[in-house]
Length: 439
Image (cartoon, rainbow, N blue to C red; front, side, top):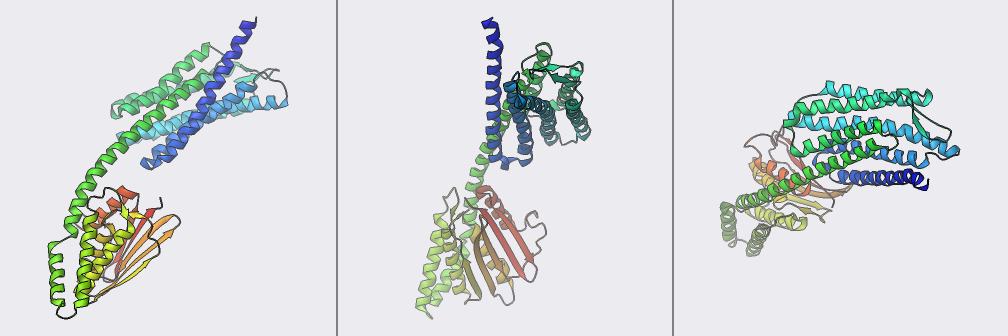
């Protein structure tokens, strides 16, 4: 008798441990997905809902099993509420699973499957309505005087709606199976096969929550598939980033250190020696600082200190002021300098403002302002000029036009999750705003 009585108790303990571990895994998985949501926010949101629904299901089942057979008012309410949540969350797992997996299919196949989703959602909400109705008028399941769960004649409706929901997902999968990646096929099949197989077993083996355990296994496989897909994407992105940065640095150096600029600067300094030796010597020092700053960052694979970039820009502006007799007025208002920025970003934008904005005016003179602030955890850089301006509509999309702006924007996004906005009015000037999240 002791052995037969101990076996059910051991089975219950094992199930509590498995489901408790599964709930803990769901918590960890949600945290990990939240940290990596930048890769695909919609996909991460769908998977988070799927895992949260399963985590709540497992926690509810832990309470249902843990208090089953206990006497007292507290156990009475806990068992009933927990079992209600188990079944409700079971249907919400189906609904959230449909949302997540249909999103994968629509992303790959580029077709709308709205009608199919409506049917699946209808099955899920019908199931939730049945469970809520059962709490007032039991026809699916009920509890005895010892707070033990038992099935009623209508219990087959629960299994039927579960099976219908899973079968419809299977039908959809078979229609688009070839359009999915191997990882996505694996994730969807695991979410179908394990719960379906366990549901059939549970019909004939009452007492253990096999479906809940199987769903947890499917969630684990889905999460692993998602993270493998994420890892592959990060590796590919880093490979492209390294290649892009290498090619871009070479291109930028070529563009920044133009032979004619150096020649013109040296020529101006040469003739300036006859008029003002002290000022010419300072201009030569500024030119040296500009060249040294540009060459120092050539081999940089990551972002550089903003102070270093700003010093190179100041040297450039001093050389331009010497060459054009202070026709370009500069205002520097840099309150925030303790951050990093992709090399040549500020330099490219300031040179564009001078060369293509202010110097194109008649007369070729004007004002440029560089302003930095730390606002709500974001480093903000503003570059304003009163040059000739331009049409800023779709400025980053026009082929062969404003390529320097487009490349700078791409480097900011790729290297430091930054962003760049451009506002320009023909005849009045340009405002460029860079935002870089605080590390």
